[in-house]
Image (cartoon, rainbow, N blue to C red; front, side):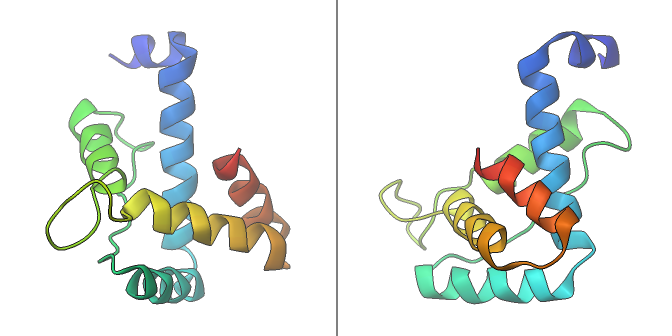
Length: 112
C-alpha cells in the first residue's frame, strides 16, 4: 500500500495536503481558534482532520478525507458550506496575514 501511495502522484499530493492541514492546526492553538470562529460564522461545526503521514494506513487517510469533505450545515445539504470551505477560507486568510513563513508556505500550498 505504501509503495502504491508513493508511486501515484495524485494520492501522494492529497496525503501531503492533508498532512499540511493537520500540521497547521495541530501546532497552533491560535489557528484552531480562528478556524472555529470562522466556522461559527459559516454555520459549520469545525473538526480538524487527523494525521495521515505517520502510519500511512488507508483508514487514517479515509477518516481525514471524510472529516475534511463533510458537508456543512445541520441538515447535511451540499449547498451549505462545509469543512473544506472553512479550512480553505482560513488558509487563504493565513496566506495574507501570517508572519510565520512556515504557516504562509503551508497555506499557499493548500490554497493552490
